[in-house]
Length: 438
Image (cartoon, rainbow, N blue to C red; front, side):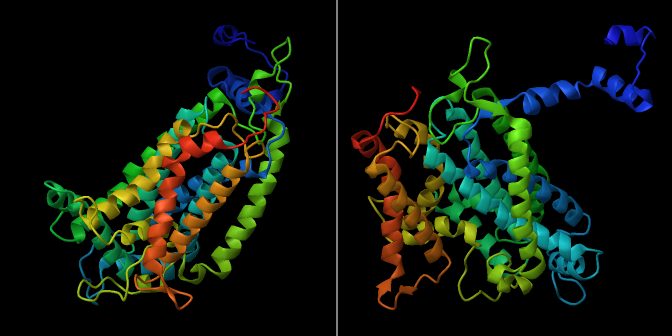
């Protein structure tokens, strides 16, 4: 029955009242057509493996973070002034959520553990793209939008980390906002603008709260929508690296594809169930994650007069923080502090150019030669090393004999060498022929 007939009053249905409502709604909001286009009739490569589950899991975690964040914002107060007990109001409001709000402890620990889970899933998602060359043509824009999402996610996580206004929150904000002053000419003015004052205080907390609950979530949602639109346009890559979307029969049906629903929705629901089982096991039994999800120092209210023994971020920022600390001497007339800021930010920015840096004739690691496999393994090892050292004090000595600072500098050097030398080493690699032309 078409919409014109329905508007003329000639609409009849044999589906009963519920069926009538569904048809009436579908005529004005084509949900069934959307379902067919993007799920039941949307074809994807039939050889996708478990590495391809992390994108949809990341989407679920994002939705979970938004929902729990809304409930937390209902009781949180972004106020750095001391209350009658001398405790900052923001810190006291977090304690109130944990102790007095119904199920507040569950909402807060789900949100804090969800931040770590989000980065864990996103890191695996990025690694899968590097493993199978999902950044290569025609998916350059898809990859670039993903890198921008990662930038926005880092900003969202950092602003949220400051909101509890504990000791580590306050001093981390002090260190990170002060990095803006490293830039010549306008650095000091930029740092004051970011903080909203000459030092970290109530104005900083208010700004970070607005960014965390309004601006950055809206930006993340928009970017994720663009990411999904770009994915639907160019289609998913696959472990073999060839373009399955180009292999069609005379009727235009993919020869190497299956419908997304039910073949992959069932698998992704299973993967999501396993993830949620592990995730909520951590929420219920280890919400602090041994100090990696909720740091011990942050259970103390912020005190501008008492500096922690050493300031460090949560685990998902430690690789980049290690790069920042590794720069201890000026180079080519550039101040060490500015070098550290550039190294830390450039570590993510260099990912944007990855589609053009990789000159190999094939995409997937399945057809790559030994050079790529060795280089990727060393890259992962350097990233994990930076993450480990970033969680340790600057004077940390590895195995009681090797200073951590030179290792961090070496790992930082190789991190950039992997990308900047890629046009050379990706061309000399002995690659096998792909099973299908790209």
